[in-house]
Length: 164
Image 1 (cartoon, rainbow, N blue to C red):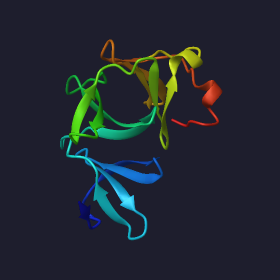
Image 2 (image 1 turned 135 degrees about the vertical axis):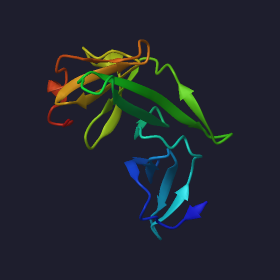
Image 3 (image 1 turned 90 degrees about the vertical axis):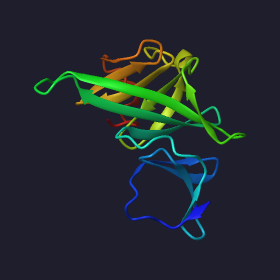
Image 4 (image 1 turned 45 degrees about the vertical axis):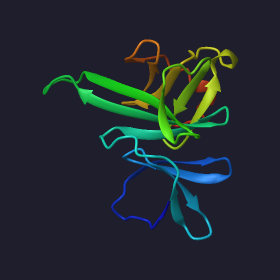
């Protein structure tokens, strides 16, 4: 489905994947941009329309959407609770599949760049986790044990590459 650009649509992320530029909007619909006309071509159904931030990550030839939603546990508290889900599109059925195990892969979500790594190749990283910046610190969300934890700044080797 080709659609005109919508000034009211909010896009959460953009990625170059398989030679095309893809965007994801706040409802989780992925579009690719037809460069000749700058029209959007819908390539996925809606995921949902909540307030979660959606990020695009490529890993081993597949495109993933990471949803992250933070909420405070009370009115006057600084304690945050985080809900995170990982999805990928099933190309045959055009349905979203929830991913609960990334294997030895981990995702790094940066301010301007998201990518995947093999945990076996990088000392200090844990598999099946999502690393991201939160309140000026590095945090890790494990798909094995939901909830985020602050971790040591293990990105020093990547500091010239990733800025949180």
